Image 1 (spheres, rainbow, N blue to C red):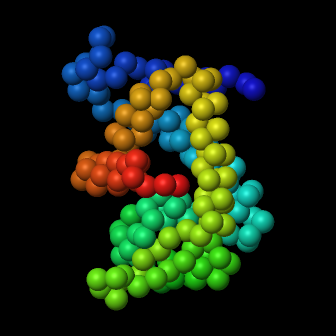
Image 2 (cartoon, one colour):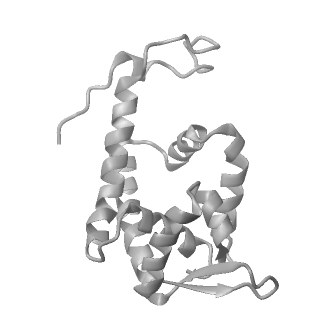
Length: 182
């Protein structure tokens, strides 16, 4: 594999680190970072794409399956908020996942208008297969770059809009709580 030559702009010390100005200077677009993120994301989702092709599913199916797996009995309304998509966009994807037996939908016990989603065993197996592919890619990238997992997590967290960070933190913490089996 060829080494990537990252431009000087990408190698500048971070603001606040030794040898850096207090505020980052105004600069031209960081095309190298933009393109590296584009290609990294392309390949990160490309691994699962190949598996999803077996079911004639796409990336939208993957996103829905991922969050339903991570949050059993998630309300459709909450899933819409997480994915930031319309009901219409979700409806087709959800219908296909339900019809093919990857997700089940039931009424809420307290509020029957609520639609609660849970993966089936078939859905759990597929969600784990896709997550393992992406975890392996992360592991290879972290090992190759010598980057600590925590540093990568901090960087990705910093990429999230500030007003969404608290919600994302709660969402991840809730899914990672030990009381839920996956």
